[in-house]
Image 1 (cartoon, rainbow, N blue to C red):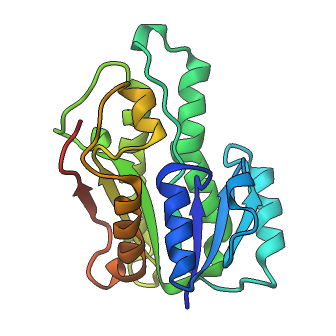
Image 2 (image 1 turned 180 degrees about the vertical axis):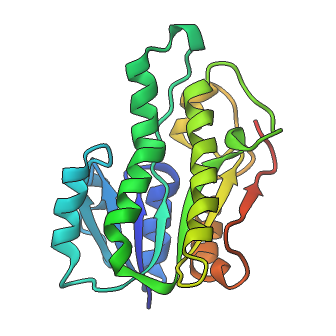
Length: 224
């Protein structure tokens, strides 16, 4: 039995990760601003956390200390997206996307680091849109650039903690049928369901560190 911390768990891939990992018998610490979908589920421990507010993350860290002294895997799945032409996107809108997709990830890793097993694994969920040379789409300048920053952060942390652990890897997801995809590309139907991607991510989070560190793996059969 392992202990996983997962962010962005109220819907989509994050919710599926929690449910599937819990069914396997793992203890899941589920972070989201909206924890209602997680209440009452066996082996799932929901915490209402605002990743854009470091004080909220600190309060969460104080609560888990005695109950969960060791975390085997941290899956940074939370993401925020806006589909809007660059010239119409305000500085505040850009900041909001970066706060969730990059700065919040960095804050959580820093504050939870002492709980991470040195043999454990930090998996940052990025996007094919953040990969250099991949297909890019108008309107996603804030989202894709923040996911590109997350990839670079992953590579840097893997190098910084290469000798001590834990391992850091990023998964660059392609099109997955989620609410976020529908928001970005209304009417588009992805070939991969959130439940299928969740299965892959759980297996990678628990075993991928044996084979990879500091890598960016494209997980995409289509971009949309």
